[in-house]
Length: 475
Image (cartoon, rainbow, N blue to C red; front, side, top):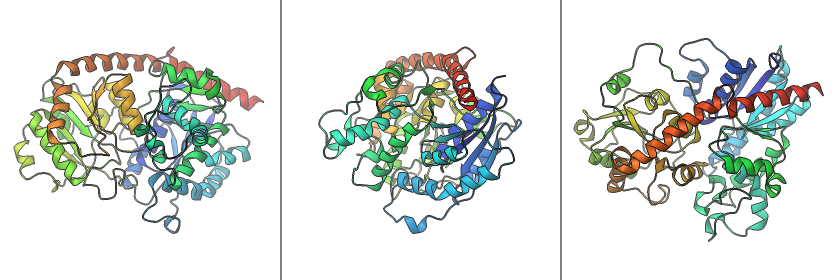
């Protein structure tokens, strides 16, 4: 009953990978905690898949959504402008639209939650005299690294990737130089300056929500709460409220793909998908195709056209499913694998696939949305990080949690050859090592379910967050 009067606005930055966790958070607040939720979506002119997410295929609509019109930033960027910089510019240029939208709402929100790229909207919350919170839809380890980066900026000379020793984050697992997030790869690039600004603005909110849970990251969460050196830069309280994931949509007739899965043996299919924006080079697509074929395992592969300008080049242009047959696969691949494989252009219903009993492995880019969906499905992984914080995630999944294997050399540095891909796939699907990982991830699945159940750590944390908000509104 304590939360019934709350009206929360959640601001999502552009991109499918950002909108999904915001919508999931909104649904969680509305359905489990009786909060009125309005999601403010910063849209782009080339993101048709986003509009599909705003209207669930079945069931009642539980959150309101308002699209903030796209802004033209063409005069502010060029061919060399990286994704993080583009995102920050889009958000900055959209702020007048956000302000006027909130001002014009018949029932204004009394709380603003901004995702990690929307910290520059905090002054709008201050202007309307409402509490403001940050939502980081990824790990506590990422939160600690980002928050501590301004200190590292002063301590370390030269490029982070050139350091001979891991980067020390107080109380947390050190970060290998090759695992730093994309904006830290080049300190001379404008996206690094944007990243530093975000890190400092993380501390301006009244609290930080994270899509993780106590049992998954006890060390990093303990450091964020109690390590004096880290607390000196991480001032707001932290709220691990995950793992929040998209619901499994089983209503309506089954797709041909799901019908095919129904006919496959238990845990016999490996699912290959690089998220809503991940792409591979033409050479890497060829090697991956041959690796899958050589492994002789059943597979579902969501394929995108080869990348020309980088692994994240489709970030702003993620589309919907297509009936076309990809013409960039090796000659004869589709005919040779038609009985054991299923190739899907562009997009597939990932939560439904991962949760299907026939799926026994997941080759993933390690975006955190996908990682937590995989954990909640109890499926081991092949970690194939491409961009953003995915290298951090891959290290956690392989070295700390022990539920994934990965190529010997980062895919961003070297094309992974077919023989290594074959070995990785067989490791997960056939070998003893894969069984060990499978047992570990199924224990984590139980941990995730318990965290979200009434009385679980994340459920209680969400209740505490809403009580804290009510206290701020009273005073």
